[in-house]
Length: 392
Ligand code: KG4
Ligand code: ZN
Image 1 (cartoon, protein in one colour):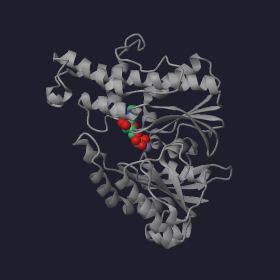
Image 2 (spheres, helix red, strand yellow):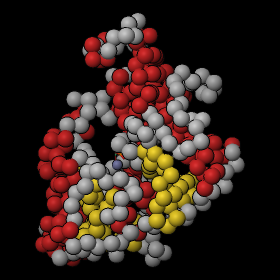
Image 3 (cartoon, rainbow, N blue to C red):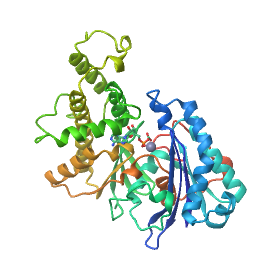
Image 4 (cartoon, rainbow, N blue to C red):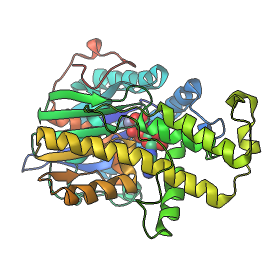
């Protein structure tokens, strides 16, 4: 089975080809991602129309490259490559930005129609979890995909029951998976998502959008100069940490960071944020910026690790899976490993390779392989409001 995956839910335009392996697994044959993040960096956040316009420009070249890369064929047209090699086309239908989603969905429908290939709709959030099933790092990579870096950090596939912590830019969910397609939602954020908390606080510190990776880099540099992390980083609140549930709340973090910055720059606490040109007024010295970045990262990571491991104690899954862009965060992985050991928890910990954590089409194709449900192309629509539990 060979599947072409297409993903365009936000500011990434991605296409990938996977094939099934003899032992019931999957491996990547190609994985191409174009991003319009650079366009949004200047404005501090995503402008949906701009993102959609970039999706339109990139989608065909990206699919073309993914197919050529997978089959080492530089001559044949997209339609011929799909007709000759591809068994099914998988596409993200939501959640995401409607303009962006439509580009991928309508392209996939058109390709399915002209080639007569089956099409499989994929929930982006469930898809993220399947990055953990991409564990085979010996595919016949050709030039473009290979340049993206190491493929995987895991060498075994997850076992069920599995507990998945999905932490992306717009969502934070804890779900229990009894098997493929059998999900139970056990908790999630009540307000901002973990990635959103990283991005919003990073913006306050003057990092460009998306600030998560940049804040994390500054935090890690600061941490590497400290001897004892735990005793020093406790400036910011850890919301809902001691409550007996699996819920998260990150919106208060932004206010707490803003207060700290106002203290540092000697501003009036009663002034509204809108009254300031924050980025130009920010005269926090670099070391304070890095210290604050480390405080923010530690506060977010502490809550994620604590709640996830409490859920492990409660549900006793065989595997714990991280998924979504925030799972690329080194401190999150490090602390999860530390605490699993410290608490002697009997759980196999999985986290995708960094390039598979953030949005890409490899896991979309992977998810469709394990949840193979073909749809008539006429019945597939983009759904920006889809939740992780919605059946499609
Ligand atoms: O899953 P994803 O690529 O896109 C969505 O579906 O939202 O997640 C993007 C989010 C952004 O908020 C980004 O700042 C965050 O993941 N992110 C990180 C890191 N890499 C990406 N946050 C913290 N540390 C990182 N290393
Ligand atoms: Zn995502």
